[in-house]
Amino acid sequence: MEDGSWEEKINEVARERGHKNCDVINVSREELGEAYEGKLKIFFEEHMHEDEEIRYILSGSGFFDLPEHSGPDEEWIRVHVTPGDLLVVPAEIYNRFTPDEGDRTKTMRLFNEEPKWTHNRSQETDQNPFRVGYLGSLKGGAISVA
Image (cartoon, rainbow, N blue to C red; front, top):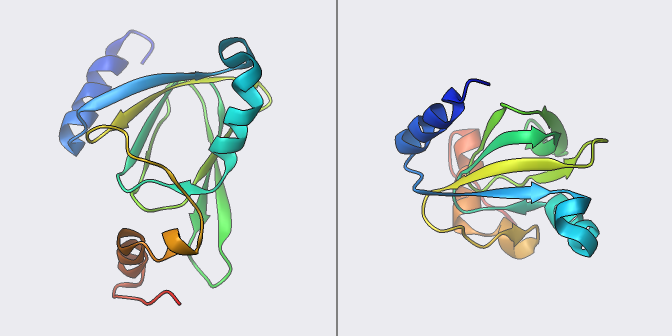
């Protein structure tokens, strides 16, 4: 969508999914300076959001890691994102992000309302009612997290 039609398409996706806000984050050494390494650590920490995440890659590239829930041992699926990629991450799914060897990414982030606090993985977040409901939906019924 190099002709600029991407903006129209992103707006359409945002309307369809009820997203009313967005921002653009530029993750690069040049943009963030001394804060760059700390920001990368935050993004790579396993975390979840209570709302679905929509990310559109404007430039640069990186990896979103998403858990595969097919067995008792959670493994990660690594998704390489490049300019023009649109990724929708369901609410309450743990994920993490890191730039690839290009060491930079510029991403549009879409939100339902205002951005909500990110929850790093812990026993408390594993008990979050939204998280428990999400896991139950994967199994076709309610589950208990002990």
